[in-house]
Length: 497
Image (cartoon, rainbow, N blue to C red; front, side):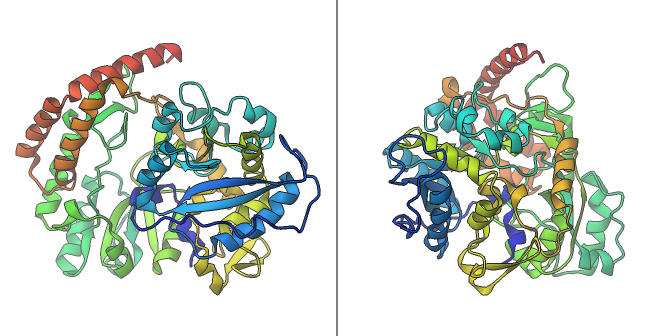
């Protein structure tokens, strides 16, 4: 297991299906400490409260074993024990909808812009507003977490969850397989635009018949300097906007140019013929048979990718670092509106986000069993394969021990990266699509039918783009955009933009 695999917010984009664990935590009846705990709020201090925590990720064999140790610690600190229930990536959205609708007991829930939609479920009443709980039981985490996360994750003026303290901006990079860059002495120093990739792609196509020059899957969308109102639907606002006008991204000159370039690359054989139907590029990264792709980055990401793939990966910027709703809402822990112990749940989230020992136990397991420490750097032991957690989804990342190849100033680099990010003009605007629900369904159906083949260059935009634009109009996109514009104008007035 490599801890390096686990820290990226964009893991969510790779939702894959399998199973649901609903298993009891072995540590809930631990008798090692019956002492009254600090900050017990509600009920007797003799009987610990059990908190049920639903989170995303492939269910791990040792989750109960680790939570037993976690519970010993939390019982002593806040008189609460923890039962974690993990739901696999591809099942999370659907199963959480069913569990919440059925009133299943739960206290803490993982939510995000891309997994069990945070804004939508906050508006539906699935999560508790934290306005009263935060100042009373979350004082420490408020001081610890970058305020931009708490501000940017407000929905209609209220906090409904605690975002993970991690990389704040969203920045796109071109990633390169360094073995091929070195072999052909490719110059990547001036690469930035989509057009600038052409000489590199051409060299590999002519010399490496078994290599896919430009790796991508069906989720690929050419980068243009706009922020989407809803991720991967064609409504967007230009990043340097002055009038806050929502446009159809397919009608912008930037996207038209990008799609023309993509089709040229596809015809030249730089892109896989199956790109529009491929769910993942994992086969390419495993084999090393790729020259470049595009990804979201974070500080020291090249180290993490290289460690994960087992060969060197380097990257260069493809965009500025922009703080968007998607990046701010990439990983949030909410308190269920049905929680029987909301105060205690808030105390736990406060502890998880401020206590180094607890945060690392939840992340990496039991010291001496799953890992050992060399100073502040972690070395995974063989048992770690039974507890391989997605770090980004479990709270304050800046409390985590370092990987062996990380510099000591890793978290300072993150803080610098966060401080230098630029706000999207529509940061904290959240579109409410209730009034155009049927049109949204129709627009989504058009997107599923036409989007991937257009974005990957598989089809000719000269004929296919006008047809796709017309299909979106027929589905009611103009009405959706009109409603979104009305809400954005009101938000702009309210916020003095």
